Image (cartoon, rainbow, N blue to C red; front, side, top):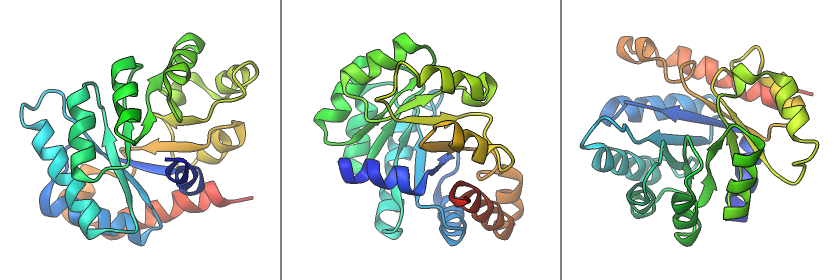
Length: 215
């Protein structure tokens, strides 16, 4: 698990794939990989009764066809989601909230735990339960000052920023102390996917990678 955490800290940009499956997902992952992305999560659609199967199949496809990619799940709110991710070959579990049962099940399965938290109490509860990285959600709307203040007393934690992070501000959030970033709309742009403009997705991916690597 430590090696996966190290790779998340190294590659930084986690693409959040929501509602994209099959051939379109395969083309999307190819475009992201060409742009230098190495981390991808497939979310569980809470409103879809077929979410467990769809997400499990998607994770398995990525794990099998893209060995350079580290793949995991997102929006994991149940132990069932953790088990499906493990069975599909996923390596990490992201959640929108601090669910202690999900965190403990993730660690028991040998996967990296990244729950979502907002307040210092939630953050410390997640860390005490075994979380490897705390996803601050929604980070973009909280601003840079928030994480700087939080990291004063909670200086032993690793933080991922999710929601509201784009090419223009990602470097600022990196410099503020975030180790990684969850990116959705800019890299999983449904209009670009529908039109087949995967070259633009590759260009955007490359920009994100360059920004988090810039001095």
